Image 1 (tube, helix red, strand yellow):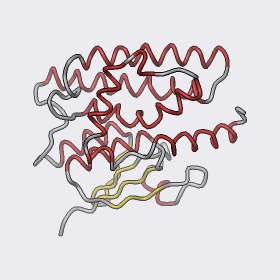
Image 2 (image 1 turned 60 degrees about the horizontal axis):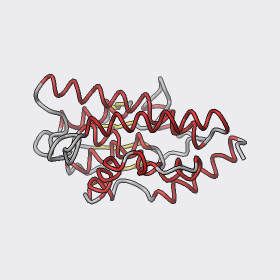
Image 3 (image 1 turned 90 degrees about the vertical axis):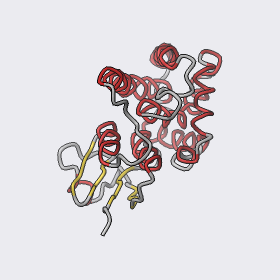
Length: 219
């Protein structure tokens, strides 16, 4: 009898997309449960009673939360293919650092753009470009942050690509103007079936963002 793997997430969540890409890279079959975050299921509340948030990975009845912890867990459990984190302790620590950097910067700065106005929105745009420029410098001339193959930092960042269109339209700017190497990296990632099949259409994300702006009363 094989492993039972369930992923609880919401389709537009970049954090849940991380788990989808990692599972796809490892070739792990799983059941997907999509959550309505305005009406959370009993299953989600049971599996993540502390934070009550998605994503949650349930492996043989045992739940894990927090997306980067989930990606690291996936890498450590399914070791037969596609290593995501380096074995070298220094390089592994560096990858974990950049994953944490993405977690602490990209989502919040992006939200300042699509949900903000005026000075807040301008600060979000400035901060996002600064953060993406630092990530572009870390990428350097490598095809992927993980080197020749996709890795932990790539998986941490690529889901936000689906939100870039929403950021750009909301903030009236173009990320490629400032970070062309990073946009070229997104295309290399999206050329992989494991990535493209795990991420929604950016235009669908934009429509979701417009709906959410109305809910927040931003319009």
